[in-house]
Image 1 (cartoon, rainbow, N blue to C red):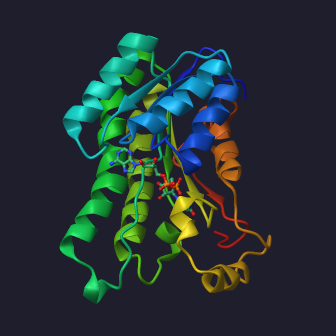
Image 2 (tube, rainbow, N blue to C red; image 1 turned 30 degrees about the vertical axis):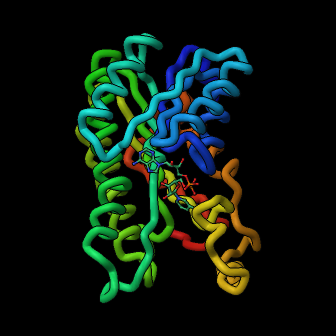
Length: 247
Ligand code: NAD
C-alpha cells in the first residue's frame, strides 16, 4: 500500500477524519495538498507532512465554489506536478427534524457534502484523465445507507455521494481511474462530540464491535482504496462501522 511518488488532495483536511487521512497517506509516502476553509489548520497538517519528508501544501478553498475548486486543482497540478488521489472528505451537519428543517440547512449540507464532492471530482478528473491513473475516494456515511431521523439533509447528501461514486466509477473506468466510497459509522471527532453520553450509550448497543470508531479506522480504509492494492475495485462502498450495518 505504498504511495511513494503519488500526489493526494484531501478536502476538509484541517481536523478530524480528514487530518487522519492526510497524515496516513503522507506516512505511506504521498505528497499532500491539505484543503480546508480553515487555512491555519490546513497549514498545520501540511507542516506535519513536510516533517515526514513529503512535499506538502495547504490551500484555502470552499468546496461549494466551482471557481475555488478549479483554482485549487490547477495549483496542485502546477506545484506538485500531478494529481493521483482525491479524497472528498469535507462535510458538515445541520441536524433537525424535517418539519422544522430550514431551507438553508438543507442547502448548506447538500452544498458541502454532495455538490462539494462533485465540484472537486470534476476539477481533478481532467488531470487524472491526462495521467491515465486516478483514485477518488468519497467519504459517505452509514446514515446514507440506513437513513436517520433528524438528519434528512445529511443522509440524503451521503446517499447522493454513493450514487455519485458509482457514476464516476462507470464513466472513468476506461481511463484507469477508480472511484470508491468509505461509509464510516460513528467516529469520535468534533462532529460526534456534540452527542450526549446517553445517545452514545444507546449507539453502542447497535455496534457489534462495542466501541465508536476512531479517525484512524477510516484512514486505513482510504489508504487501501487509494493504493495500487485496490486497482481492481471500483464503485464499491466500504463500510467502516463496527458492524452497525451489514450489507
Ligand atoms: P469535522 O467537522 O471534524 O471536520 C470537517 C472539516 O471539513 C473541517 O476541517 C472543516 O473546516 C472542513 N470543511 C467544512 N466545510 C468545508 C467546505 N465548504 N470546504 C472545505 N472544507 C470544509 O468532521 P469529521 O467528523 O472529521 O468528518 C469528516 C467527514 O467524515 C465528513 O464528510 C463527515 O460527513 C464524514 N463522516 C463523519 C462521521 C463521524 O462520526 N464523525 C461519520 C460518518 C461520516
